[in-house]
Length: 173
Image (cartoon, rainbow, N blue to C red; front, side, top):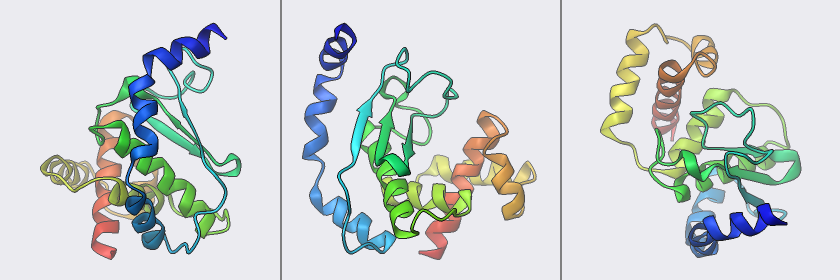
């Protein structure tokens, strides 16, 4: 109970903003993914660093989705940080993952596509993204198999993997 009260106090402003995210953005997102209906309600958890949902999550990650639970976990203390400048962008990224899982019936998709579509849907392309794509190319990310492995190789490689995935999906769209 004390933890819940502390979260409500610390994240009150963010919680108040969540329902105000433009419904048009959700409709646009559903259209991009190919969904006619958004499906079941999504539970959004804003987890502080000492919460069970944050423990063990690598530091660069600012949120994650659990599709079979209709759950998006946001880690507000990690925002801003590449590739996100705001909690709204992290929320849109994680909701994109959930919608993509619904659109594919829960079937596995390549991580580069999953992260690329979420990146594309949640924010605008930036100069920093272009720089990270170049860095990824220079560091040897030259095909999708290498790209898949780059997500788990640490901060710099992971950031490049996100940027390259975003560039690929942006090109496809």
